[in-house]
Amino acid sequence: MIAADNLPETTKDGKFDLLVYLQARQKLCEAALSQSVPQQYPDTIYEAMRYSLLAGGKRLRPILCLASCEMMGGTMEMAMPTACALEMIHTMSLIHDDLPAMDNDDYRRGKLTNHKVYGEDIAILAGDGLLAYAFEYIAAQTENVPAPRVLQVVAQLGRAVGAAGLVGGQVVDLESEGKSDISLETLNFIHKHKTGALLEVCVVSGGILAGATEQDLQRLSAYAQNIGLAFQIIDDILDITATQEKLGKTVGKDQQAQKVTYPSLWGIEESQKQAQQLIEKACAQLEPFGEKAQPLLALAHFIVNRDR
Ligand code: GRG
Image (cartoon, rainbow, N blue to C red; front, top):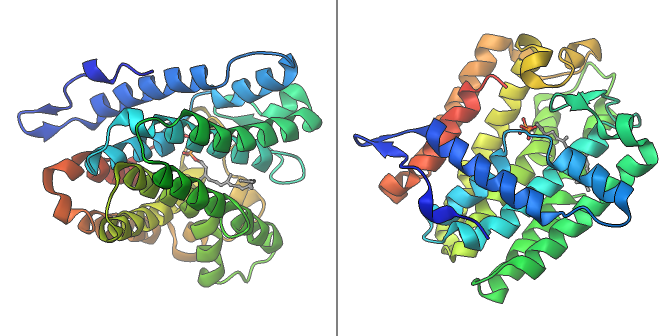
């Protein structure tokens, strides 16, 4: 399914090259994603699903899943169906988030949003189609992994996506709109659920598929919770400091909507400091894994240093 055997060398003179690592994994993910949802009848729905799924993006979620599986002794082949499913779910959450009933955005990943191209009805269905297919894809396509591990991944993913995760975070976010007195506790709740829950299941599912122990899964969980919050803090900062060309979506929306964000509570400098501290905490969790943790350590640093 994937040509994981002729990947470029990522460590040179003992130094890990994240750029080479990211480019190689992004290429693998693009190919696997394109294969995962073939164009077929009814054409409109598959076209709409593929439009957003293949619109680019950093592919951070599938890459985290693959990296975690490899760190825990598994292979990329074992994790690729789950990695694709995670990107399908991330994409569907973006499609629904961009709808007029939610954030009402015109651009995403440098392209018109799904509903702008296909209409709201098809955009809702494209999201639904990707969500359902993600679970089918894990169950039907995962190979060389004992069934109880696959079942555990499906159960954890369902929890991360539903009202106990993304959906719950999005609801509190919607309810907080237009309120200037949102506490740090509520802001953390929103982002731990809306952004953090999916990033956490990306890392943990890789570990589950590889057969990691409960103790190691706890470490992966703690690593992911910290990078999840740091990711959102940087997302908030980029909404103020980056350009539309770089982010591929409208910028300055938080300020325009007078949304409470980390920079609005702490200022940009303090927000950056807090994100850095979270990354250090995340990396500390990976100490027992030694050299094998290099990709996940580098990905954590990438999250705070990214410009898009
Ligand atoms: C999941 C059933 C279900 C419904 C969706 C709309 C919704 C409920 C939740 C919103 C989730 C959301 C859009 C969270 C924001 C996460 C975030 C910071 C996205 C940006 O991620 P990047 O920067 O984007 O990784 P790319 O394009 O690089 O993949």
